[in-house]
Image 1 (cartoon, rainbow, N blue to C red):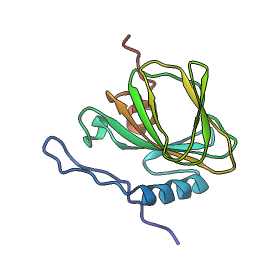
Image 2: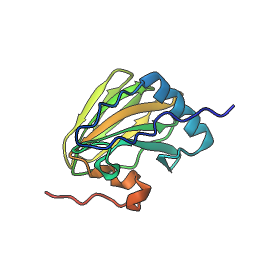
Image 3: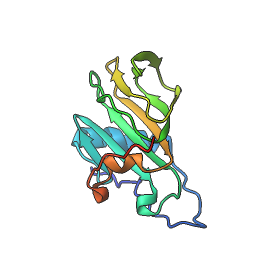
Image 4: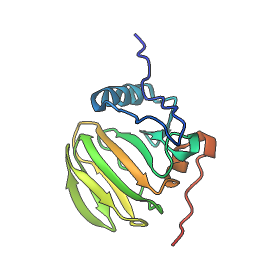
Amino acid sequence: MERELTMDVKIPIPGAPPIIFNLEEMKIEMLEALERGSHPNGRLLNGRIVVVLATPDNGTSRDIAIGLSAIPAGLSTEEHSHPAEEIATVLSGNAIIYMDDVPYDVKPGSVIYTPSMVRHRTQVTDDEIYLSWWMYAPAGSESRWLPSRGFEEPIATR
């Protein structure tokens, strides 16, 4: 049975009402997207899925970007950096996040702050899919996840 996707956010700003996300519904939706290998608002990249929920690009926010990432067991993100500061919360799974080559163990409930332009990558360390909810500020670094922006890489401003 096909579930209706609930993370299609289309709220104009300014003066828009708040967006209320349900983390349990988002977890289910991301697991289903990972099984399918696609999400209508996301990008499949090297076995993982990234979905942008709010961004100035589509009028759902003014200054920040909000999204979700799902990384299967045994996989890792590529090392990268971006102009935005990032805050992520682990929803499920365990991983090691390397920031400028320093390892940090994270688990469900961990909140991670990554400063602007810090090199980082996430390595899943158990058999469970790693899910995280993330925010970028200022927005712009999420452009690599947006089909409307041609998946362009953000430009460093430092």
